[in-house]
Length: 228
Image (cartoon, rainbow, N blue to C red; front, side, top):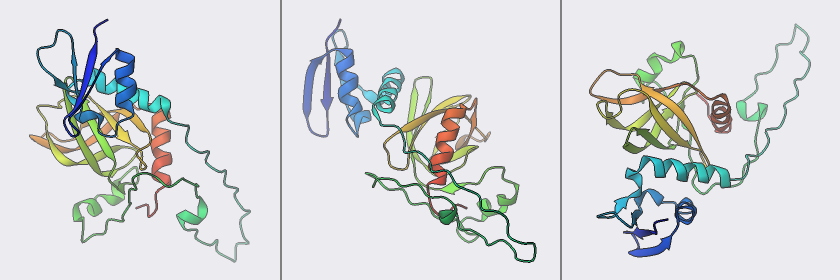
């Protein structure tokens, strides 16, 4: 088995030799693992980790396996309906359900989009199948050997809009998208495709959805305040 070495340009730190399992274990513990470089016997030069789709996928899967399971969602008991002459009170989302969550390493604030700030989003609001949330979640989009790192502008159970425009020629067809949780402690993998035919796109819709990951995404979104 060939020996592998790691190098961090940020700290000018070189580590090794490692076997493949030790490399994955070390990188999975680094917040900036995508910026590390890797070299093994036979390579002519160092390669940045984020350029290797297979390696990135292995690291993300290892991160998911080492994370503890999410806290259970409390069951909500439905009270009996009031008499017809007294209309039922309207419950605020935070009163209807709440989940106790430990303080995250990085917080994500969900904000309500109004008509002045986002007229385009507001115009299509009545036709949406899924409610959309304005929040910044760390996102990695992968297609073939191309990797694009960005954040979400808004997200729903049907798709995402990302911060940076992505050239359609690079990510044409079905892509793999890694989305981090609001506290950056776990991530899910979904299939997505562009919803635009223009040269650059910000929007992607989910396809070939895995129900387990969709359920987890729904849980993340419901735990955030000010749902739109």
